[in-house]
Length: 407
View 1 (cartoon, rainbow, N blue to C red):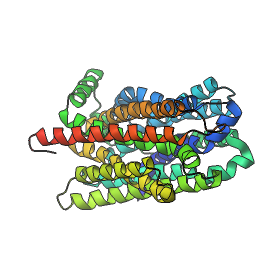
View 2 (spheres, rainbow, N blue to C red):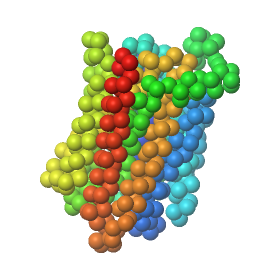
View 3 (cartoon, helix red, strand yellow):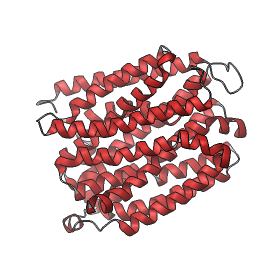
View 4 (cartoon, helix red, strand yellow):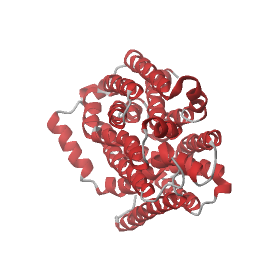
């Protein structure tokens, strides 16, 4: 219990904030469009820049985590997120909001990876799927907080007030991580690699066929999931399903309830299966197939099932969080920070491209009303996402079959 409170909870609270920042634009998008005058492509780029700065810092982040430990690295990074929230709160142009959003992405880029690194340091490897699932569930709670609660607060304090509140909470969590988390275990401290050793470790990771077999398919699934969870599900629910803002908030809440259930359920299932000799990669593959099935129902405009589809997308789309436990079990502990951030780099580059690309596809179709996008644009974007994910899954299955001994 002491480890859970001291080594897991502070980092998990950081990931809570990371996901609240990540998902909040799905709720405030109409306010940004109305007040700042953003188009679909601008809205997509503004929201996606979080992924760009997040991804850009992953390689140095992994080296810093393995060199200085998660406590010191994450407590400093969160201060950049607080600065970004303040810049967003006072911004009055697309450029100003983009800079603030970029700072937020940089500041929260280590939240989950610091937590996973801490789990590798303080918990048995056999328990990593469960501990990582618990940590990830805090992100789901953060995403939940960015739906109905934000919808209730925006009329009272405005979207700018939301970001001022997030800035204050971020400073508090940074202080909590620095003051409460214990120092790294002595064996980890004595195993601190040199710069040359860290670079060699990166070569080992990026040169691993095992890594790339998992990384590409996981990244495409993650990119689709995050693009809709953090932005495009909201406009789809409004423009295609015809829901008002309150109903959109309810549907997004269910999306993130599904995410919460998915990360906890998949982590517990993987823990149970692993004790019976079945690796978590089987669960990942099945859930990616179910995610694609759910996306197909979005594409054919099964709007009567909008609430069910949102829950299903959240549940099945969370599957790829399990691969971090796979990496934790496959690679040496001293590589944990770098291998997890290597996956994050690939995932968030994909998320940036996909989220921005969705905006470009939607914007290619004429508006049906001020601030309302053509359902045909939404359909074309979802079909493009499905095609990319399906291709990645086919490549994964083919390369896995070729690998001697499988996974």
